[in-house]
Length: 216
Image (cartoon, rainbow, N blue to C red; front, side, top):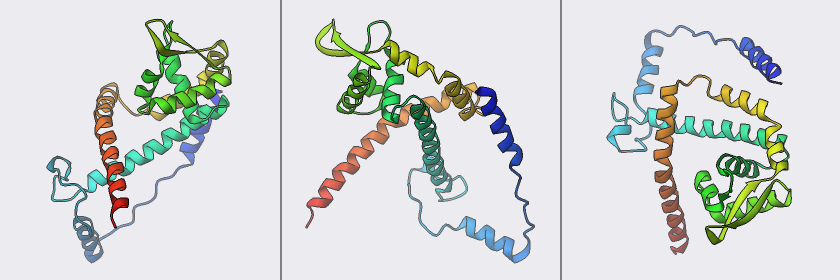
């Protein structure tokens, strides 16, 4: 399976050709340069740390947002593929993988799964209920907390996730094939540091939406 995927990727790479760069000179070149230097909209952020070095422009910041959105979409497509291969939805697959990673010998709590997925316990409870109905996970009382529930993969759940190990390994290696060890660790730390700020901002936006609806 991995060899077939590698050959497909190689084939696509060889089919890609570089677009020739046409010569630009004189007035047209100067107009193009001026167009790049004079954005038609003011910056969408005011923090000096995030503005471009060569002037009051947020061009690099805007590109970062576009890149983030594209990365998220590509990653979601990969997760949807993994999920479909084992007959699950993407949220069900994500929950199953978190349980597999953190269950240990006794299981992992619903709140722990929710924390890693940056979602609510109500959502995790709903999704894991479907996994339990499918026979992929089991639930039992936390011996240290009579009210708590711990989640564990069943034998069927482990088997199902292991069925796509070759594809998962190959695709994840391919997604991050160009990043160094140092850059990976820096990127992981930066992404983790942004999660709380992003979540707090979305909470603020939701409050703004409610207040906006109340206005006459």
